[in-house]
Image (cartoon, rainbow, N blue to C red; front, top):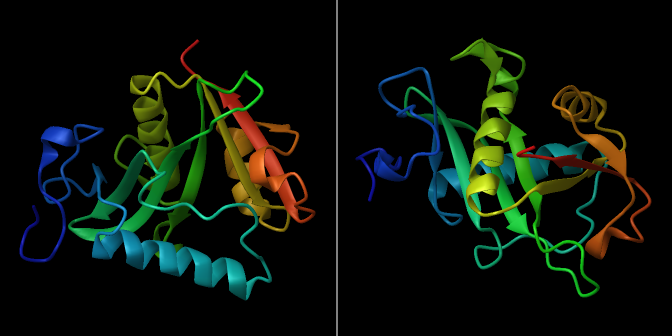
Length: 183
């Protein structure tokens, strides 16, 4: 269900206590194929491609992304991120998920909002909350080696570099991170 502008408004499913219209920034679970989700993912891919990046690994889909969040600033979509559960054929990753399609519009990067955090940190915190509710204790991610700001952000948020995983094992332009949560 959505408001006239297409933004989701069923906050009974909200990850945080923020609502998209009543506070400057709200983080809202949003369907993968919702127009705002698509718009933000397209902006993310355009930016990565313009910087010379590629999309290694298996692209996420509505079928394999368990949680997808959109950050709204007074009803306007400004950021997003999702979780895809990782499946291991050799054991050890049954409680792991991968962060997918983290993105914040340039106009909102680094801007402190809400509880004095940047929008990206708010999205990441909401993803961590959602992961814990899913029984996930290990978050992993892949990012471009050339994305120095993104790498610094993840490191500030407690992620540490790790080895390649899953479909990324042959990726040469990527850096991999992980973080144990809920301890």
